[in-house]
Image 1 (cartoon, one colour):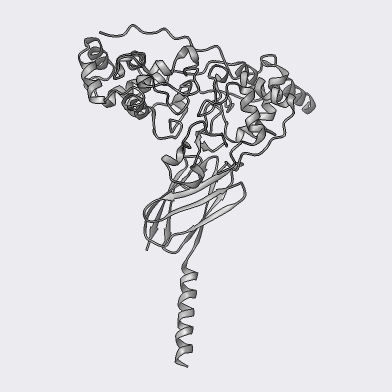
Image 2 (image 1 turned 60 degrees about the vertical axis):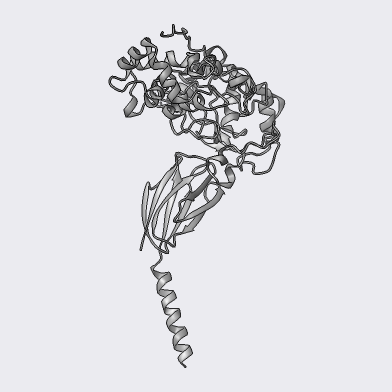
Length: 106
Length: 329
């Protein structure tokens, strides 16, 4: 009985955490991000959607969150989840003038 | 009436149907940073520095030694030659329209012209001149002391003012009106039918426009186009600056303006003609490892290849005329 209660509580807790996390969408259009900066919460996911008729390759080499989403064409998206607070510079490797900042808050 | 309007638009060719906002026509001047607005004094100073071999450790190599206006602001060699006649590993890029191109260098390591201008001067394998030594050298020449004071009052001869003057001059190195430009402006006879077909291929089947876009025919981006290596060590290109997988072997997209004047081609100068370049792209590149996903075999006919070359040659205008300056003493 006690075990069942603990499992139920854990399940509620996980469900609450999942419910609290949000997904944000940032497009890439005309070799620019559709947002220059974005504020998200720890645990949130950002989906990067390519609206240009050529490939983009979104990445970050920031200490807080380093990722390389690979190259993807028009109409496709790639996502990154931000699990630590801090400021993250996001760029396109192919088109270096494409830059944005994501501020991850607790 | 609508039919008549349509007929008029067709008769005007692709060009005149557009207004002054044609993305294929060059803006009148290159953008300038707020801290280095162009003035005649700054351009004159930068021009003197650009042509002065005393900017090198050997007092023998100037910026113009490699970026020679008589050779399309390049050097006509597969790869440049630096201090001590040593062969460099990359092709000397033209500086035509360089004021529109950021970041700079084949691997994009210079964020702007002001910083880029100092790089080859200080590089041991290129001009091999340490900057403090250069400042001393220039400060002993009264002519330069006076020119710097007129161009950058109160700043003196410093690393920053040298870089700014060179940048100010290089922003004046611009492509001139080419047959392609005249066609875009409405002169239907400015280019051949082959070149017109080539433009359609360039923006369509051949996929060139994915990277060579806009009036300068460059996306200012970086791509691995699958060139065979020409040296014993693979050149990692942009990866040296950005440790992102797709950047291994990727290089800056060069302008195609004045392309007929700047052979040989590619970052390693491996192709002597535009025909060879088109064959490379038709094969979809040679080295498939880490190839840009934009690269695909094109299956072009012989006529289509000739049309693409005709189009690219139509991007070459009558070169900007340059009077070599008398250097200060």
